[in-house]
Length: 471
Image (cartoon, rainbow, N blue to C red):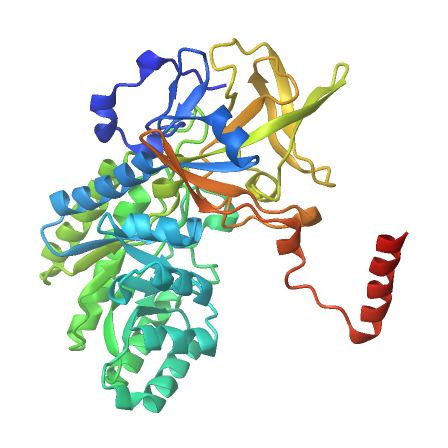
C-alpha cells in the first residue's frame, strides 16, 4: 500500500518533482474523509459516474513531465532540440493533442498511430515514423503526410527510393532518418532491450559504410540523421552516456562523406517508479547526461552540434494514470494465499502476465486504514495467470470497494485487448476538479461491430433471433 496523507502534498513544489520518480500522480491527495483524489476529483465518485475499470489520467502530471523534458533540453543543450512523445505508450487523440500543446512532437510506429496523430492536429513536420516492417501503404501514407521516416532496414530503403521515384512530381524530398543498432546492453527485461546487437530493430553497426554509400547514391532523399534506442525502463545513466559518443561517431562518418546530416535522435528509455524500491533518475538528470554527452562528443569530433531529439514514452505518461477497479469476491486458501478479485485484469493491463511487471496499489475509499492483510489481486479472466498484483499488503476490503493500481499510463490501454470479450475501459482526463472523458467505454455492440457471418449461416441466426423473440 502507498502511504499518502494530505500533508504529503505541497502544491508549491509539484512543478519541481520529477513525475517518473513518483508512484502517485502529482495532484493526488487524500480527502478529509480518507478517500483518494486525483486532479481534484474523488476516485470513488469517478467510478460511480463512469464505471470500472477506469483509466484516470492526471493532466497536471502529463504537463509537468512534458515541461521538464522540454526545459531540460533547452537548459543543457546549446543547439536546437525537439522532444518527441513516444506515442506507442498511449496513443489516442486527446493524449496526442495534450503533449503537442506542450511543444512536443510525436514518435509513431504504425499507420494507425500516424492517423491518430494527424487527426489530433499534430504538425507532420514534428512527427517521426518508426517501425521495423512498415507496409507499402504505411510508407505511402507517411510520404503523403510529410512526416520524417525512420528507415529500419534495406527493404525499406529500396521501397522508399521506388516510391519517391513514382511520386517525384510532388517536388519535396522525403525526410529520412537511419536507425542503427548501437550495441549497448542495459539491465532491463529482455523483451524491451533494443540497443544490443541481437535485436530486430535497425541496421547492424557493421553495415554503416554500406548504408552511407546507399545514402550518397540516392541524394533524391533528404538524409536528415541517425536514430538509436537502447531499451526501456532503464535506471542507469551510464548506458545513455555511452550512447552519445556512439551516435556522434556515426554523424562524423556521414560528414566525412559530405552527407549533410543534421539530426540525432538518442531514443528514450528512462524508467519510472512502479514500487517503493524503484529508484530511477529524474527527467532532469537523464536529460543533462545525454545533452552534455552529445556536446562533449561533438566538441571532441570537431563537428557542429546537430538538432538533438529524444522520445520519452513510459516516463512521460506512465506516472500520470491510475486504474480504478471495483472489488469483488475474496477466496482464502488456508496457509497458502488469499485472492482478492477485481472487475478487470489482463485485458486492461497485460503487463504483469507478459513481463511479470509489478505495481503499487491502494484501496481508494480506505486510504487512512492500515494494511492488515496480504492478498493477491486477481482479474476476472478465464486464465490462471491473470494476476495483477501478487502478495501485496492492503487494508481489509469489502465487495464494491475501489482498488486503484498506480503507474498504469504506459502500455496498459495501448496493449489492452478484448480477451474473453470484455469491453475495453473508459478513460477520463482530470484537472481542477473536472473530469473529461477521452475514451468511451466499449459496449457489447462494439465487440461484434466487425463480426461477419457467412451467408449460409445468416438465415439460421435470423431464425434463432426470431424464435427467441416470439417464444
